[in-house]
Every structure is written in C-alpha cells, then in structure tokens.
Image (cartoon, rainbow, N blue to C red; front, side, top):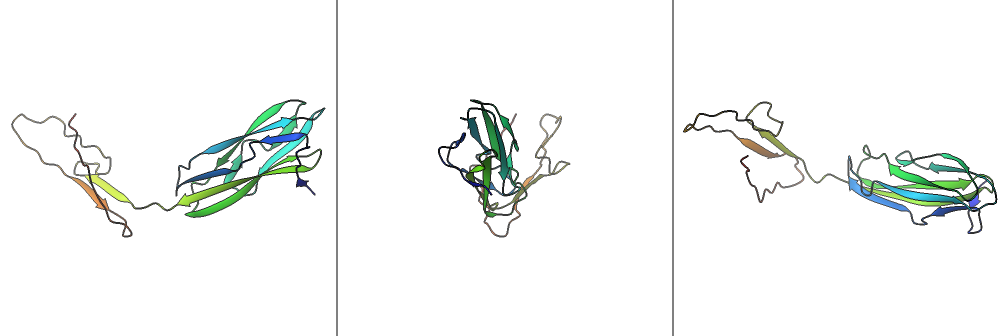
Length: 168
C-alpha cells in the first residue's frame, strides 16, 4: 500500500499544480504537455515510478533509478485525439518505491465539440484541393470558374464575412 507523500519524503516533485488542457475534438489540445521535475533529496539512490490512471494521459518515462542529488524531467502529455466532447479527468502518480510515498498530480482535459463543418470546393479538378490552377489564358479572353462554400452542419448557421480574393 502506498501513502500520499509528505514534504519530508526524499522524492520531490514540482510543480505542485496539475495539468489542465482543452481543445476541439480531434485536437490539437493546448497546452499539449506539462513538464514535472523529480529530485532526489535522499543520501543515496532512489527508485521511482510514474503512471497515469487513464490511457489518454501519457508520461514520458515510467520510472527508474534517480542518483543522489540528481533530477529528471517527466513530460505528461495527451493522446486524446479520439476522445468525444466532454470533460475528462486522470491522475499521474509519481511514487518513491523505497518509501512507498506517492505524489498525485491531476490531469484535466476539456474536449470541445467542433462548432460546425464547412465544405469548400472549386470547379477545377480535383475539386477539393483548394487550388484553382487556371493555367495560361489568352489575352482579352475570359474564363469563369467557381468556388463553392457550403455549410455541412445543420446545427450552426454559416456566416461568411471579410472575404477577399488574392491574385498572385
């Protein structure tokens, strides 16, 4: 059985704050990660582990040996691109295996629903490459091509403003 670490334990973990991130479903999530520093204040080597309670929260190293007076950085990240919208909670537990003391850092992730989907196509094949390669055109002739912007979401209105065309 492990117990919550006291300030007198040889393994020191900083910062003491948890990791809070958010983003739209499919990512990216910001911030993408948080770095924790583990320090060995013991008069000797120290065995430690780090593990996340949920698979979408990741740790850069699962543990090892920390020399006397040494420190190491552990990056807590996210593998959450497949999560559905909603709030998610996990814990990362850093444990001193020698004293059985554990440090818990919360990981909170808010996955936001994508507010709408817009489809953009043009009349020059391929129609979904977002490129309109007109090629060479004879002087004093005209040519008409179209760009179609469509609202693919029935949950939201499509508002287009500040539209500009750039001739390169």
